[in-house]
Length: 120
Image (cartoon, rainbow, N blue to C red; front, side, top):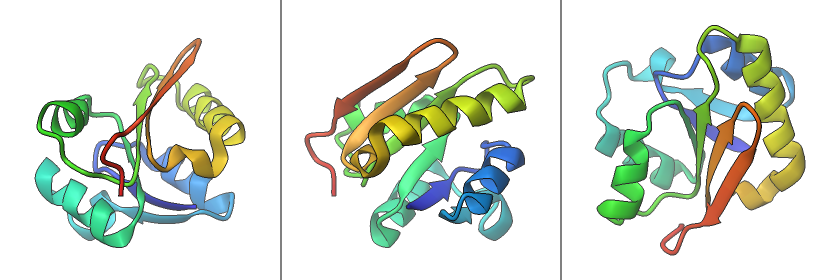
């Protein structure tokens, strides 16, 4: 799958995705300091799932009705990179390509996902 990892995403998650064969563009490597609107525009232009740990993207998507191919929001403790990787792996196994067109929240004990009305 094609991913756009926001700058706030931990590097081990990016490494995990890449080692699993995913195509990952990492904002921290290519465009550090990019604002949220530009991140969304890049995800849309490149047709990439947006992986983030920033809940503000929910506001952009739902309140301001910004189109995006899909969002995966990590809400797992920062201090636990292994747990984050396991939870992301579980979400990919459960939803696969269906992550596109959805807003998915990954938490410690559950996955929540809802369809985006304006996914592109």
